[in-house]
Image 1 (cartoon, rainbow, N blue to C red):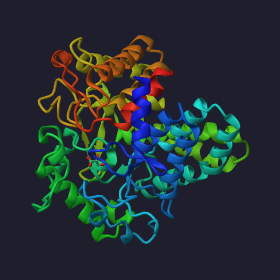
Image 2 (cartoon, rainbow, N blue to C red):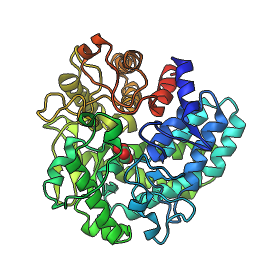
Image 3 (cartoon, protein in one colour):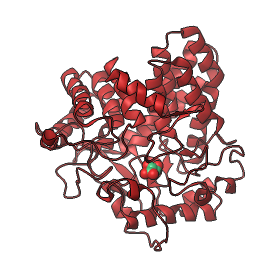
Image 4 (spheres, protein in one colour):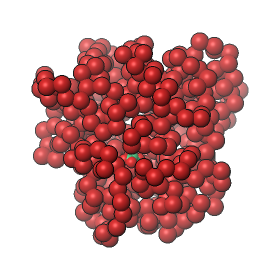
Length: 431
Ligand code: DGY
């Protein structure tokens, strides 16, 4: 499996970056890139560094890093650069057409993990020294432009920014939006069984939210004032907090940079405080999303609800509550950990993208979180479930959590030879 994983990553390598999957995703995606770089680091330090460098090269002048960098023309993906029009923003990167939205801040903990794995620590430290300030600027962008109420919790303005694209979490928000019916040609559903992908109507909402942001030339301030989708996402904010922590560790390793360390420590304290007072729902026994636009909590449980474990956010009692909820709702013996949405809910769908299937990147985060909190046995199950599912179903994009499904040789869903599944397999098996 290790050889196969390396072959997949080599096969998906383009000049300087890795595509997530040949049949579905022909560009560079931000959070994919971070997970992929950690896998590359296990067999080629230079490739891993190049992956990160290419992404940072596409950073905007205000520190923003886009969710997709459109390196090459491709007619196999919709919506492409001509729909997104990043050039509308005055500070957009002129060399790289991209989207005008972002994805979770993976780069802090990616750099830390790459350094742990690196054989040549001297080169690795030099690489960090040369690039850490760009990642810091990305965090500064989030705290200065994505937190209008100065709470230490940043918002996302599009479901694609969350990474958990079509989770049932967003359904109540879409109900508040009057999106037109668009005329467009989807590419994904001509390649993948439509029952595994978001619906046409969902895509109408996705495009409409982008059109509103475009009308304002992607101005953060205008988006905060008028986007119908404005959410504080525990997964996104956990990854920011985890990455803050990594940046502090790495700056300390480098020496100096006291002003940046102080700033990160201040952001960190504020974020952790608000996170626990605003996003922990003790009745549900889980962290939840908050709908800033409509000023109300989104009281649903998904795999994102447990991601604060990865960032050291819950106290011991809260962690205990999270683990109990995870085991009760997601942890049945007939189920692989960890479904992306509450399996006890009516909206759970084990086949459909982020409405139920298992994703390896979430499992990787939860594995590390459980380990950090001392839940060794459960962490071990998270890891062995991940490896077993990859063994049985192949290096796919996402997986049915029902164990019974695999008796007939069923495969995974979505893209095949999926880069982060391969990359995180390499990382998981080496920890
Ligand atoms: C897609 O095209 O489904 C991607 O996840 C968007 O980021």
